[in-house]
Length: 158
Image 1: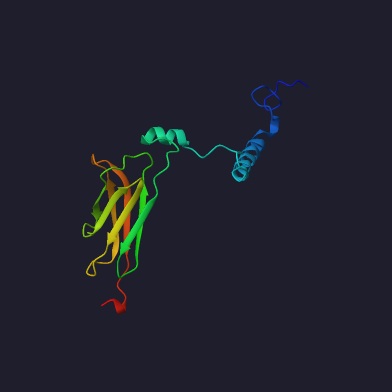
Image 2: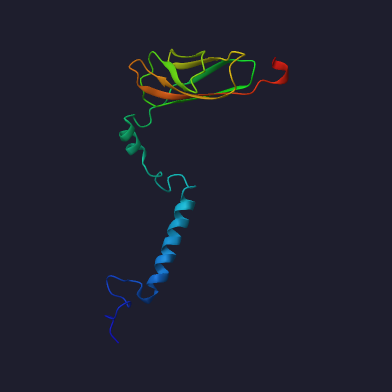
């Protein structure tokens, strides 16, 4: 018996006749190993895309922290404000605009000593809903997103 028959130990097929089963088994072990090694610090590199690729594609420095954000809300109704800033962006002369729907007024954003301060004043006649807007820097570039969610007025708010 020679070893040059197909599926019996040549250089291109090290598993012999077990190739179809071994390929599935090795794929399953790889998936299991990847899943469990994610729980071990340093056990596996981060998910794709890597942080360096993301920083290069977006133009922001990797690992640049965003400044602290404070939010002040003046409203008789429950109001939720969410602020997302892009790391490394220029944060001078900030303006909140382009709200959809465009009915929201009374929103101001400013940089105070390295801290971003967002103030939202909700008028009593302001319709309830979700308002999505952007935060722009001095040159008009978008440096973040702002979402304001205003709840329906309660029975006692009239």
